[in-house]
Length: 136
Image 1: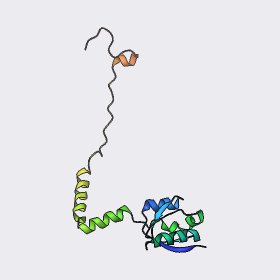
Image 2: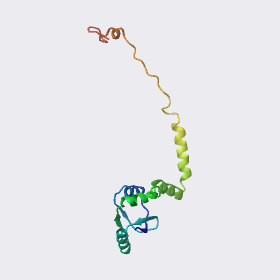
Image 3: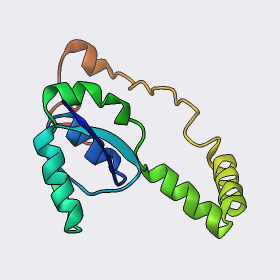
Image 4: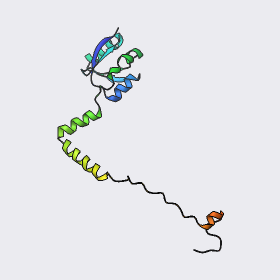
């Protein structure tokens, strides 16, 4: 029998680790709802009462039932977008990206023709390029 518990936000790395069977430190919160076994819930409650976190490892059945956690973490992109919008820097960044894209739009796109090495008569005979006794 499993008991419902709410934990604080987990990063994408923590979510990946916990769903791959590794241990992760969790603390009480309201971001994610998970189901804990009787023993896990007892340890979680005791840690919550003391204001501490606990190390949690999910069993295979729990891992199967908690796949909904994937994609629900706090990602770096969300943090970055929040930071950019808070500072009001979005127009400046967009203008810089547009200008940079237009500046480099033509670089490196032209293909060069492969240059062929001119063959000397000595190449056809299979001899040396510069026979002994000649000076160039």
